[in-house]
Length: 207
Image 1: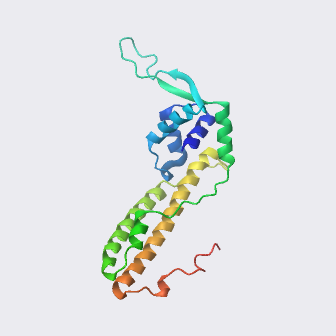
Image 2: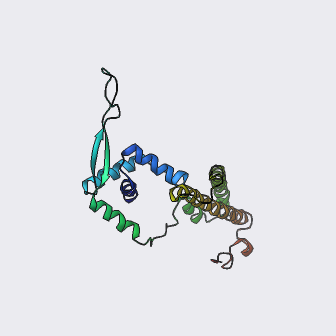
Image 3: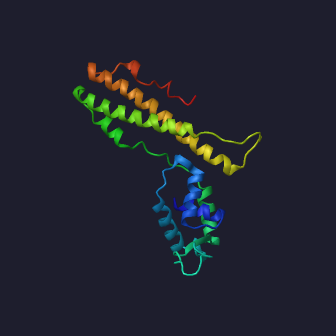
């Protein structure tokens, strides 16, 4: 997050709320941003010398006399080391894959008896409903209004790519949850899972 905030400042100067707004416009629902992380990133970046205050600008400049002035908002700009830091981060390979870690995996992995399967099925049903609702919400917003244009600017396309990423992940998770539920039903009824209910190496191939 710190490097992403730095990138937004390298793009152009900005202050806290402006950076949050630009981040949300860029990433949309694909990233659940906690605004406090942006302010924490700004504080760290300033301490490290990658950004500096450009100019304090009062949010109430021009207000009529006698009205109280708000706290000045701080506009930040990137330093030369900050620009170099961002370029180093941007060009570094992304070698790590997000680990498969979530509470649902722990529940699945510790269900060991057929009589426990009903509770797991109820959890899976709740997860399926939540994923289906979230997927429907993303799909309802997945549109790009470009009229008759034959091309778009990169920053116009970025939110579309981000929404597609969220949709693709939700679709995969939803399909997986449904397969696990079928397996849990079989485990509950028979104490085992038929091989036909398990994914095969062929079905999981890159092709």
